[in-house]
Image: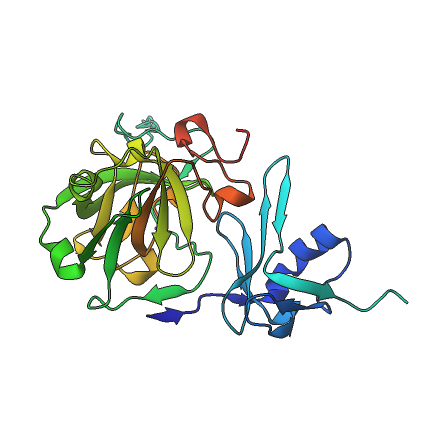
Length: 90
Length: 199
């Protein structure tokens, strides 16, 4: 089985991530819980336009983060990330 | 010379085609994916039903193609609010695939090639309500729409019609799938607008 990618880069998710974390996340990085790859969130593979936003690891294509907006709730699953780190505010 | 207006006539609408609440009609067939499109070789393809006792029923592509198929024309309703009328599919009814499966399970978790899953009550897969579809609009089902084969369960929102289907796990206790465990409704009836948990 081969996989055909159909994604945007993680910058396409910048608005959703800023809404969620309250700050610009384009300089944030994280580590994939599945394969250990460390990457900037801007380098992740973003699948948008479906029922929710999905960020996948550029190394193993595993799910790093999922985000769903309903009219009344926001759901976040970041269980595919060991951690997220970003520069501290000056 | 009098101007005679022929008046304005909207396009005639077949009474069978009603839009569920909150939906709009599209003539396109949008492609929405939560991950990369798997290219599944037919000589590697399998469809597996695993029961709550662990019993497995497996069909390879040749065995699957030898099963009786049906051609159905159905309306599709996506939770992202588009609906598409009169889509034609060919596939094998789940009634055929589950005919010889002994189970007392009430729930099914549908698995796809890749990591997609979705949960459906078993009774919604039976009685002529669901198919494993492998042709769309008279052609082989293209990979971007779930080929070589996808679940088709048109009475529920279209995220339940899992693309690239590879099997069904029968369960005594409901397990949530890819979207259901992050806020989407367990059942997903478009006519009751069951988009999110709590709807």
